[in-house]
Structures are given as C-alpha cells and as structure tokens.
Image 1 (tube, rainbow, N blue to C red):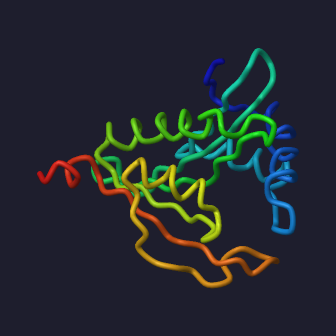
Image 2: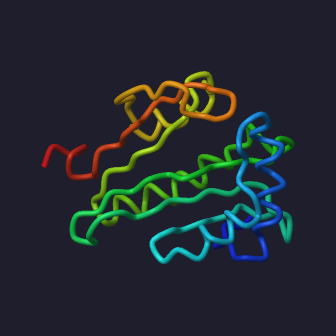
Amino acid sequence: MEIRRLTFEHAARCAELEEQLFPGENPWTREIFVVEFAQPNHLYLGVFDGDDLLAYGGIAQLGPREDPEFEIHTIGVDPAQQRRGLGRVLMDQFMRLADGLDGQVFLEVRTDNEAAIAMYRAFDFEIIGERKRYYQPSGADAYSMKRASSSERRGV
C-alpha cells in the first residue's frame, strides 16, 4: 500500500465512496472534490493498493502560517477495507503536518460513529461541543472535537 496526494483524476472515485459511506446525507460530489483539491491550503491524501483508491482524507490549514489551525474535512474508507487501520494511516499523516507547524486541529463527527470517535480519541482529540442537527438531511447530531497543538500537549 502507498499514500499519495489526491488529484483531479481521483475525484470520481472519492465521490463514489462518499455515496457508499454517507447515504441519507449530502455526500460530496465529484465537483466538490475537484474544488477541494484545488484549494492551496488543503491537502487530500489517499491510500492506494496499486491504482485502487482504498481510503481518502482531507485537511485544511487555516489562519496564518506562524499560528495555524487545522480542520479535518473528511476521512473515508472503502467499506470493504474498513477495520484495517487505513483511516489511522491518513490521520497519522495529517497529525504530523499539524504537529510540524504546532497547530490545533478541529473536526466534526457524528455522535453515533463510535469507531471514528475512538480513533480520534486515540489521536488526543477531545469533545468540545455538540452540534444539533449538523448533518443534513438526516438531522444527525455531531460532536465538535479538538486536538491541542503539540506545544500545548507538552505543556509548553
């Protein structure tokens, strides 16, 4: 397996996986992924087996470079590939980026997505709030989670 930066050619596969992973919500379309990939402050990575995209994820850097914040935009793993640690592989890459620039990281996750919440907790994320009816059209609630910067976690 290999981790590579996603390009426009991967947008259709990401959208296909979104349809599988987030039925009943507003899964991202190919066009949304194309726009996301084009943003200079966004990084989208994929886990590949040869040419097969097995998992994808994206992070955005917000604020000034000398005091950045990061936001996880999405993480998705092909249902046939789940429980193999592919989401953790992507999160590890994103957390290395954030730690390298000493930035905090934020994300939202469905309150009923216990597997994702457990993974985020393993990366030192804490629940900082709840957003009622965040996901549409289902109306599912989300937790807002935060991971402190590396200097904050070290007590510096």
